[in-house]
Length: 42
Image (cartoon, rainbow, N blue to C red; front, side, top):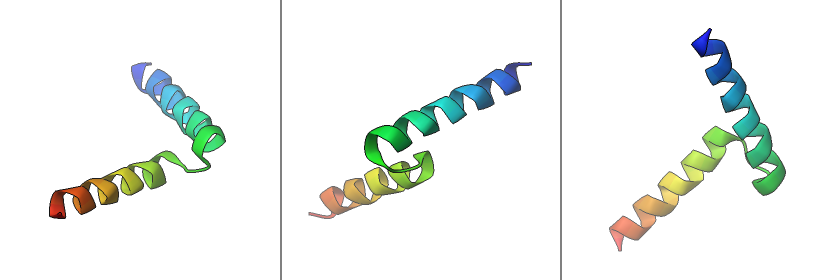
């Protein structure tokens, strides 16, 4: 039962981010990660 709720929460977060930023969760994370790597490299 917990997995269903977890998936619903993830789907909700995905929809929310999609509306707010135009990116899906995995794209948003990839973007944040690449920004982090760039800042670390300087």
